[in-house]
Every structure is written in C-alpha cells, then in structure tokens.
Length: 512
Image (spheres, rainbow, N blue to C red):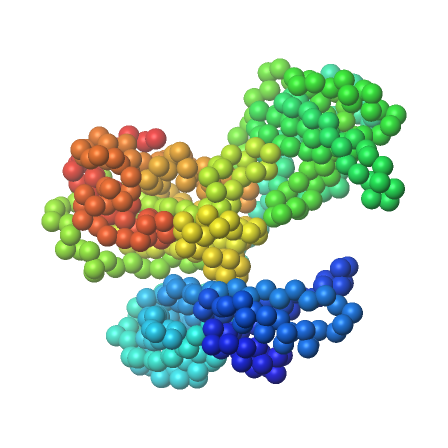
C-alpha cells in the first residue's frame, strides 16, 4: 500500500498530500473500489494518471472503481479527532485533558495543534508525536504538534470512576385485538404491540390498526422475468403510523384486493434493520380491530442513567462576549432553575416518523444554564447511518467525514437525556422542530423527555420590535456574532439571547 500511495502522490501537484481512505472488494460484482482523499481540487489529467497507477495494483479479473474526494477538515474536526486519539491510545493523558486544553489553528499547508498539559504529567512529547502521525493518516496536509504548560492542577478535575449503567428493559406495550376474521392466518392472535414501540428486531410481530392506504404495485421476478403483484400498506393504531410491504399468496389475493382504506387489519410479520431504521414486512394479513374505547397508555420511561457513557459535558466559561451584556443583574427565576438550551443539525426537515421517513440528527449542541450563567456544554456529531445530501453539506458545513466515526443516536441520547434531566428545555423554534427530533430519538432509546419548553421566537416577538425574528436577526440586536447553521454555535447564541430576554421580561415566559 505504501508503494501504491507514493506512486499516486506523484500523479500531480494536487495529489501530493493524498491519503488512502479505503480499499473494498465486492465479491458479488468483482469490483474493487479504491477511495482516495485529497486536500486540493484535482484535474482530469491527474485523475487519469491516478487511475492508471491504481490499475497496476488491481488483478485483471477485477473491475476498478477509483474514487477521489476533496476533503478540507476544519479546526473542530481536527480537535475531535485529537480527543478521540487521546481517549484510545493515551488514556492517562485523556483523563486530565478537556476540549479547551486542545487548541487547533489552521495554517497555509495544514494545521498546528497544542496540548496544554499540567506540569505534573510531563511534556507529553510521545503523545504529540503519536497524534501527529495519526492525523496524517486521517487527513490531508501537514500537522505540527506542540505541548505547553497549563495553569490547571489536579484539584481542577473531578475523577470519575468507570461505572456501567444498569440496563433497564422497558416492557413492550400491547392491546387486545377484537373482531378478528381470518384471511390467511390459521392461528388467532389475541394481542398486538403498539406501533410506537416497534423499534426492535423479531421474526414474529403482530400489529393491528386502521388501514390508511393500500396500493397495488408490480415487481419482476429475477429467476424467470415474470411480473408479480405486491402491496404497499399504511397502518395507524393511534400511537404511530407504519408503512409495510406485503407479497400476497395466490389463494388469498382476491380477498386482499378487497381491502380498502378504513378497514381494521391485523398484520403478522417480521422486523429487520434497513438503512439504519426498523422495517416491518407483513407475512399474513387478516381483519381485526382495536377496541373502540382504546386509549394509548403512556409508555414507561427508563430511569435517568447514573453515569455518562459516551458524551460527557464540559465546563463552560465565556470570556469573549462577556462585555456585550451591560445589564449584569440576573432575575431570581434564572438563578433558581436550570435550563438546557440546545440546537440540532439534521439530514432534513421531516420531523414525523410516519412511514419510517423521520430524518436523522447529525449534530447536537447544548448548553446548561445554572445559577443564571452558562455553565456547561454538551456537543457531539451523530452518525446518521445514511448518506448526507449535497444540500445539507452545503447548508451546515458538516461532511460525511465528520460523522462517519461519530457515535449513533442509540449511544448519544441516553447521555443527552441525563444532561437534560430536571431542566427546562430552551430553543429557537424548539416546539416546532428541535424537540420533535430529540423526543422521538430519546423515546426510541426508552427515555421520555419532560415537555417543559421555552421558545425564544415567541419570547422575542413579545419583547422586541424587529423586522423578523430569525436567530441571526435577534443575535444582531444583542450584538452577538456567531457561525450560523452549526448546532453548537446556534445553541450558544440562543442561550445568550434567552438570558437577555428573561432579564428584560424579569420573569420566565409561558411554557410552549
């Protein structure tokens, strides 16, 4: 691989810093996919030369597909990777280094980084060298590492022992099926599970609800080219809506064709993970209903985790914009309560789980207000387990590279729930957008967030006279500058805005 990479870097000036991201062989198609990352826009001639080099290393019986991507990491991306490397390879140092102790600066040919270490742990030169080498394998460009003495002492750190949270399994909710009439099943199911609880994998699942929509479609059977019918159904049980696919049997197809919107049906089938989400496929369809007086019971929540597992909050101190706030008096309502102000970046705007089309969270940025000041931060990328659209990449600046090694929501949301526990939740359009996402993905992990919401949009409309109430407009009113469309920046400016608005109002606003 080193020989190949050296030849590849000789294919042009714009490829001289290239790194090899992956080499994958697809046995079924006989295709070898080589993924290369570079830090400069490359020419067609350079690509052709690189492809010529790659073909020398791929046996003739395989087809080559060469992918060259331009990737320019930002400072936060490099900082995240350094913290990750420290946690994996230098655990002793990682225990006494916080995000603020890792400074990253972009320079002409790459990045410089500095680790600020307590005098008692030494100069950390081995770690600096190891991190530098690891960064060069992850990103293009030059990396220069340094260490400096921090003013911190051991007393500044809370030493937390390694603990595991006790796993708590929430019972799946079920309801009785009435008026069952068989179309295909030989056994009569007595109960069905709530569609909102359909977040597990099983070979045998029974669901029941109202048929919202049914559509007959056609597919071509591979073995003989024959066209066969199948059905796409949408079902609602007053807790959620699910779309499912059903392939009929010849003996029952005429009865299936008689199904119509509004019918009560029972589907017996299986669930599987598809594109990062649970998908239900029906094997048998019958008639059946919920009781007319059915009222969904509230789902029990898992208890708040005792320990943070993946994402731990960090202390926050604001020096850069402290002078912008002339009114330093803080109302008692801010001092006597705690608030988590958060913002999200997502793969899209669909905040409804109907049909399994709910968009995914790709970044959470949150700040906790304690005793009337911003005291802690909670920030992480989240791997959406799906490709990001060009539109989202352009809007947020978040790339595939930033999220590919990030934890999934299953690992993040328990920590976020713990961070929010007992707090009011604050956001800019929180009720209409952000809360729907965190509420859904927390519930998928078994946690029920308290709906105690303050929205800075109606609060701004009540107290300020502005041409519009977009986040950047309100921020401009308070002379706050920030990098819009990144969750961590939007959350911080929203926290500052919320404090200023409550100072003006001198009381908490109405809950949403």
